[in-house]
Length: 354
Image (tube, rainbow, N blue to C red; front, side, top):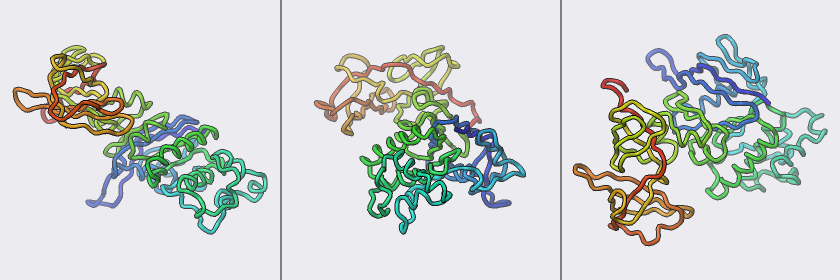
């Protein structure tokens, strides 16, 4: 098992006035045997970071090491084939003319193929007995597991997964990512998953690193990232958020949903309080803060109720998440709102500060 360390990594494309910075001082640590999800919107630099780690691109500045061995630094660039990094691309990219066993064994020595390594990794990904099949005889999820087996076969120091579930339908995606997670754990592999899917990142990773504007804005365990975002951008990107104008004083803030307890002491003054929709509870009219239902969206396992709080100025829109179907609630119904738990608070930036 190997630890990945990235320090001060920068990468730009073009030159002169046409230079476009993509990575702007990325710092990241991936502990040995863990899975880190690099989460961010399209164009934030996720794929570039993956390609630099793999060695397909050269960094401009910064140091990258695997288990203490420097593979990228000023004046140093270890070739991809010498980094012991396995890559699982977005759509598997299997060789259509080779069997499953041929795909998995591609790149292995003859001795390794004869020694049963192909069968070992096929067992690992739950595809025992599939070695003689052709790629077109497999489902999309099975093809992705073959791609993972191929990446694991040489015993890499690191496995990189480039949005590997994006092409799968919703039901299959959840099943395959759990199978992939299980296989990585069984292999003791250190892995980095690149994704724009927040649910995917939070559900499978040991650590989630949010990449924003070419930098890691926050890297933390999924539950901590969700509960304790480091800034407003992370709070609104990772999961649904209820954002309220607020004025803080000590460990509380006055908001349109009443006085809310905060996570830790913050500077007194104006800013934004952030809640998760599941913290907003609906109660009978006359209790809590008065609100009116404006609509509901049912997702099967839960539902989001959209609400409006009448105010002396502009009305305020918020959302509440409930388990199951929102039975008995219709647009126009009056309800009360209570808040469960603490809010995050982000002070208003000083004038001229962005």
